[in-house]
Image 1 (cartoon, rainbow over the protein chains, first blue to last red):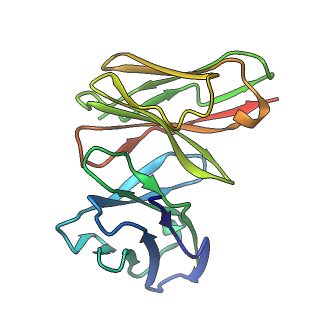
Image 2: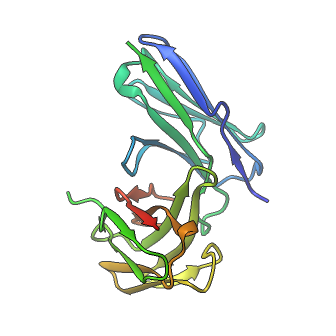
Length: 112
Length: 113
C-alpha cells in the first residue's frame, strides 16, 4: 500500500529559527510530490511541487527537497516567523494518472 | 482570479437528512477531486473526475455517498441519508492537468447531529 508519513505530528519553535519538516513515502517510483500549507478553518494552499526528475524546489524562505532512493522529502523553512504557524502537509503522486496520497501533516507553531 | 468555490461553508443538519455539497472548480481546470478531512483519518480522497467523467470512486465510503459533475464548472457531492459519522470537513480541489498542482477550496464543515 502506498503511504505518506509525516513526523512529528506537531512542532514548536522560537521565532527566527531555521527548521525542517519531514515527509516519507513508501514507493520510490514517485511521480511528483507536493507540499501544502493549511491554516485553521481553511483549505490547502500549494507551496511547492517537485517533479520526480528534480531534487529540490525553492520559493522565498521555503526549500523542498526530494530523495527518491531513501523515500524522503524535506521542507526547509528559513528564519521562521509567527505567520508561518500552520499545518504543513505533503502529498505524493505515485504515477501520472493516480491521485495524491496525503500525509497527516505537521502542525507548526512559531513562538514570538 | 477566482479560486475553487465551495458552498455552503458550514452545514448543520439532523441525521437522516439529505446533504448536498457544491463545488465550482477553477475555469479551465479539467480534473476535480472531492476529499474528506477528519482528525482521525486525515485527508482522504473520495472521488475524482477527469473532463467531467468519474475516474476513481473507490474512496466513496458507502452507497449513501454520490457525486456528479454535469459540466466543467460544477460538481456536487450528496449524502443520503446522512449519519453522525459523516461529520467532517469536505474539500473540493481542481487541477489543470496531470502532474500539475492541485488548488483547494476552503471546504464545507459538515456536522450531522
